[in-house]
Length: 84
Image 1 (cartoon, rainbow, N blue to C red):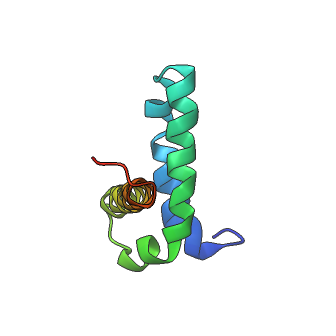
Image 2: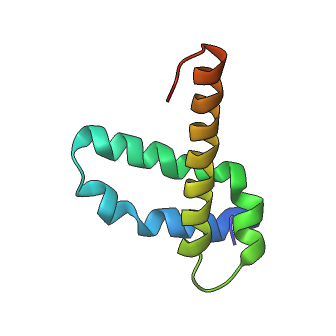
C-alpha cells in the first residue's frame, strides 16, 4: 500500500489508460492526461465505489466534469446574452 492508500484504485485505473494515451496525437494525449488527472477531484467518490471495475467510476467522474464545464459555458453564454 502506498502513502495515500485511498488513491490506489484511482491511480491504478489511470495507469491502465497509459497505453491508450500513448496512441493519441501529442495534443490529444496532453488533453487526455489532463482529463484523467482532473479525476483526482473525485477520488473519494471513485474509491468509495471500490469495485473490481473502477473504470466505470473513472468514466463517470470524467462525464461529470464535462457536464459541469458545459453548464458553466451555458451560464456564461446566458450572461453575455448570446443565444444557443
